Structure formats: C-alpha cells, structure tokens
Length: 281
Image (spheres, rainbow, N blue to C red):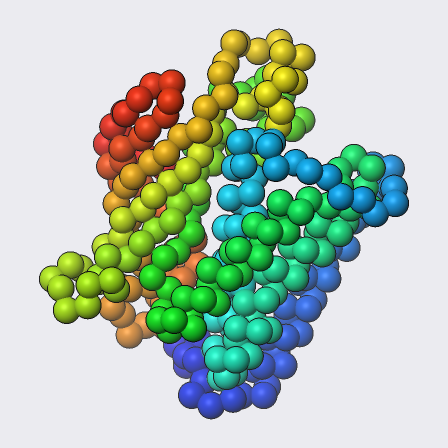
C-alpha cells in the first residue's frame, strides 16, 4: 500500500492513464446519475440563466467555491501521484472541479425548475483560481477552504428542501453550513516558532433561512425568524503539514483537510453581537 500511494518521481503513463480513466468514469457517471435521478423528475426547458445571487445569503455560493477548489485540488494531487508535470496538474487536474460543476450548471440551465446561475459559475471559477494561484505563487496551499456543519431547527419545517435526514441536511440546510478560509500561519512567517500545522480560520455562515428569498419565509408555518449573516474566527489544523513518512497517512490527511477541526471560536452576528464557543463545528 505504501509503495502504491507514493507519488512517482517521473511520469508513469500507466498511472496517468488510470487517473484520467477513473476521473472520466466518475464524472460521467455522476452527471448521468444526476440527470436521471434528479432532473428527470422535473420538466425540461430551453437553456436559460437565472439571477439567484441574493438567495440563501450567498452561503450556496460559498459552497460552490469550496467544492470547485477541493475537486480541483484532489484531482491535481492524483495527477501528481502519476508523476505528471505541474502544468498538467494545474490545467487538467485543477480544471476538473470547474469543468464538472459547470456541467452541472448546464443541467440546471435546461431545467424549468432552476436555471444556470452566473453567480455559481463565478464562484466555481474563483475556487479553481484560489488553488492554481497559490501553486503558481508559493508552490504550496497556504489558504485552504474548509467546511463544518451542525444540525438546526429549520429542516423540520421544510424537509423536502432543507433535508429530511442528516445526510440530506449536510448538503441542503444552509443554516447549518459554515465555510472557512483556513490560513496556515507558519507559511507566512517562515523561520518562526509557530507550529507548521497551526492555522487561523475565518468562517462565514447564516441563520434563519427557511427559503432562499426573504419574502417567502411567511409562506410556511414556522417560528418567527430573522435571517442573519454569521462570521467566525477560530483556530484550525492543517493536516497536510503534519510530518509523517507514511503515504497512507498523507492521503488520509489530504482528504480530511477539507473539514474544519472543532476548536474554540468567536462568533459575530448583527442580531446577537459577539458570542464565544468552547468548541464549534
């Protein structure tokens, strides 16, 4: 296993072809599955755009940014494992996240229930750009988007939209989602005594949302809520900066580095001011 997971020092064509095949199969299967299992239940339409930039207090856009970054990062790391050049990693690897999510956006565009969102496409491009720009500037990822989630009271009032199970709520309940920019402190102060794995994380989320639009909240029998943005400041751990010679652990750490580590957190909102959490996720 260790030998298999060790990145190749030179281009291994067999590995590269394997990576390309796996990514193509997974992406195609995911798109076909979405089209059959999700979009097939709704009427089709001519391709069209919608402006949903004001919905869900932009938490959904943060999700697109996060997803595009990590899909591209993980794909680039798979190409690095095959020994592909940095150019190929950035073009064909990092571009996968943007290409896949743009294809999903196209499916939205042909559905009468939704529509392609320019805001989503911009968020997808921004996530890819964050990964590529850091590789070009620093040859390392100093700023990493991360995700955390907690259940909320709102899903029970509209489970078809916000999720009826925990798995659905993680994906759909924007009230419980928090998106972070986790900054590695040591990488910005080389030579300091700051631990290489210690990060400072800035988070964004929102609360009080039953629907995407403020004016629709009153259509549902729910407690009176006011929508509000939430901002967070917390400590975090960059798992990829933990020293280990095990390629198995490096792979596990790379995957888990998509999640924010629970830690003491300061929260601010317009409604409640500053609040402290001994541990927030």
